Image (tube, rainbow, N blue to C red; front, side, top):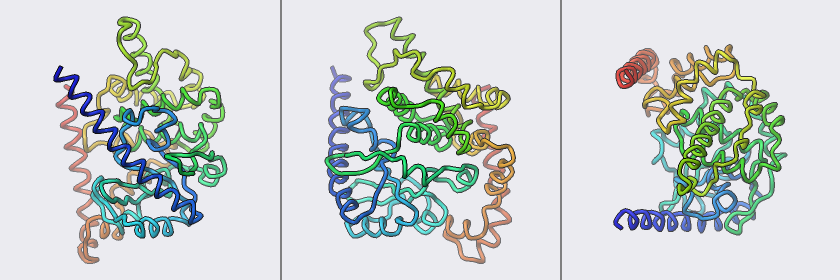
Length: 353
């Protein structure tokens, strides 16, 4: 009885939070529309009402939207005019660093956070390894409505690619919401999605390895859930998303991504752990997996070098240092990164031995 009550209380709490978020969305998105500032819905806010009919089914820590790079300052000014302030609750960096080096800046008011992106890839060192067609994203965007307010959403292929890349690289394959979102979009868009177009675009954007990893995990989780459902017919599908469609992610779709065989073998242990609902990597080694997910081998040295030697300006803004402090920090920072990485890998080896 107490367990059932706890679940009901949690559901009502989530419903109240989502209702509050949607109220802010309705008001703010109308302001964007009136100001002539188009925006594209990303992740959770693009799926509420379309993939998850009950608001409490999809938790949202923040509201993610994409604006054009040229519109970013106007969008930030509009948010601030509406009483939203810069928020680093979900990150450790300040606004100056986010504006210059990250692909997004977060603003919040009354407990509701808006994460304004100008690029689908947040981290600059991985953004440099991809070739997202931003003009194409905007030209293919589909008119949508959320909480009664006008907006845009990504076309099915672009949406699946973004969700897969975000789940794989930004969350190190350890993101349950991400897999529910991927499977949910595939279900509602299965008649509109072209797998050959998705694979071709993934290769062109240089994200095919990351997409292969995320889809492999999603397919494995779906198949495991189907087996469990067959063993126990009383078991309900997770979060209202049915898992009985054996070909929701066909094997041919994974093959079409053309992820190199040796890379698949290298990533297989991380994929298996993520299929089992476990974190692919322990905290502190996320960048290591990110390196494995980079498409082109010739981009790997650049990622490693940018991770070790990000530059004085990056260090100054990231750690709020004076120019003199940043100068000296550039010599000690690589050693600190290597020490943290070695320690994290050692702890992971001990934990899984």
